[in-house]
Amino acid sequence: MNSLIIVSWLIGTLTITSYRSVPQQTDSTPFHTSTNERVRSGGAAVSRDLLCGACRRLHARCRRPEVRSKVHYGDYVLVKGHGILRVNDIMGVTKYDKKTKKRYPITKAIDIWVSSYKEEKAIGVQKREVYLINRSSYENTKKI
View: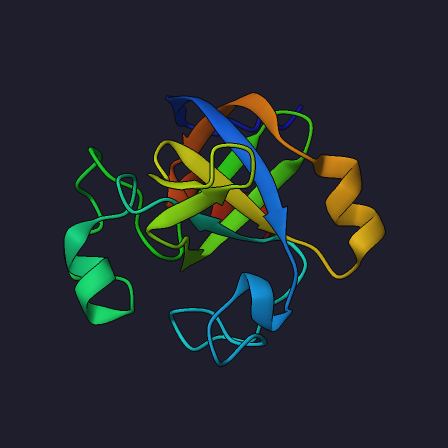
């Protein structure tokens, strides 16, 4: 009998939203992430407070991704109810609240990339437990 162990730790209960490749929700390059990858299903953006500062400055995975206090580009996260996603983008600094007509900082959040308005509406705004998956334990599962 083969056993599979995936090592992970709880990041927290985060706000889960979604985004599409439309100019209103992205920058001037809506089909590319901040790491210059093409957007794809299974990709996610994290709020700036969660992402490693060195990764943020480099727009790429930094040289010290073993530091566990932050999420790094290329890390995999398990979002309960949404599966395993790969961090390949960063969220904007603020969000605009139409009711109060004010901007608020985006913190403790993950934005899942979706390809359609229907998928975006289905996700809405949720609170879910999010786990950071040890990269080597997850990559080994792909070989099985």
